[in-house]
Length: 298
Image (cartoon, rainbow, N blue to C red; front, top):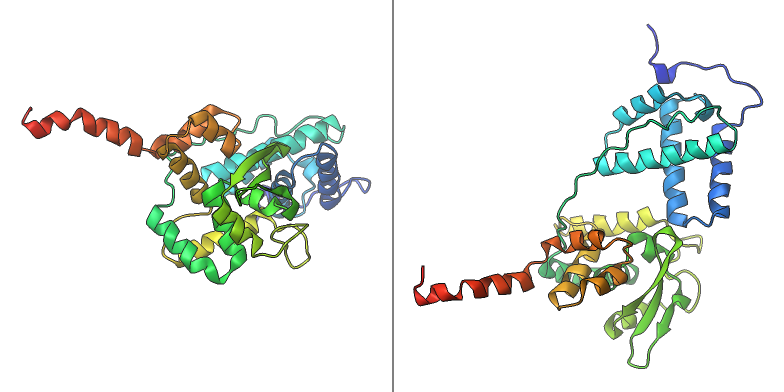
């Protein structure tokens, strides 16, 4: 029986770098380019998934057909497949630029179109339950607060350092957030949130250090928070608390451009997608249109 294409043994040049060495070299290039830790972690994870699937075939001998077969084998969301594909294409562009491959085999990989979905932020009752239940774990409690009341992504929570908080005279603070694409922004930390952050007792270094004393991985922050929410019967991920932050700002009449700045969105269209589910202020106006019906006008 003939083995599947991606499982066939391939004779390689002894001078060809191993897949692990190649990935390491690529990551060092990303580091020199000052790519964010989140981007580097995601790139490495994607390439190692591909290597596992290739089962011995060197990355430098991969063909477009093999890459398409790998895409077809993925059993994850369309959004995840799109992200994986973008990472693989970026890796092979780099390999071609470095002269490691004669031609980029990923150039014609199709990046699947990700359908836009309306945001469904965590509800206020659900958030109250989650915050109350998380009091037993101050790290988790602070994670939920930073997402729900300051709009931080999981990667941004993971990257927080104690010295990133600049206290204000009113008891709150301004936080330097290390956002996507190595782009920092400043967000307001309300006094009640800063009080909970202070209970962590951190004066320098990572706000939520792992067992090694370094920053946690973003996917670990997401996994812990999402597992906790699901355990409470709340069908939300940590990111839905960030959606709640944006929605509540809009409910309070905040200009959409200020919401955009607070979220760290490059495109205003991304922010408006987040706010598509925001209906309270619009609902009040729509209800007023029908006030005349109370007087019997049909």
